Length: 160
Image: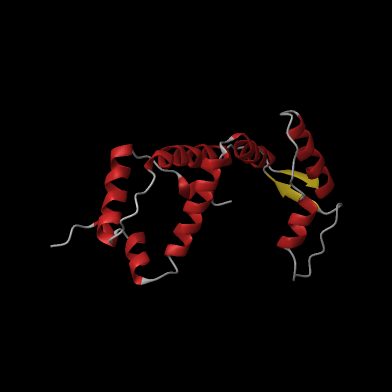
């Protein structure tokens, strides 16, 4: 997971100025909702921190990982909707690698479970906003000149 790139340290006034400049220079008239931005960045920073917990790499079968995941969620009275077998089969679809319940996987399970817990315990609006922010950030790299300007902050520069 390349979550580390999402670490952000800013304050509300910086964000207000940034989004205000984008709105003005892009000619947007619809107001944006700044009250959700701070909590989204706090979620991203929490997720970043959770993903970087260091522990030794462990080996386990897909079935063992599924059992650990189900037990992990059970201790929080939550139901896991993760199916590791389907996940790994989708990851390796179209390759020569056949994934079964007995396939062995090496992983830093502490990080995996910290990320899963952070996602499960977080406000779902913050999670949705973070996913949309990441999705939009990726789209900006592939989009029109105006969106490219937004991505490179050219749109925040005052004309003249």
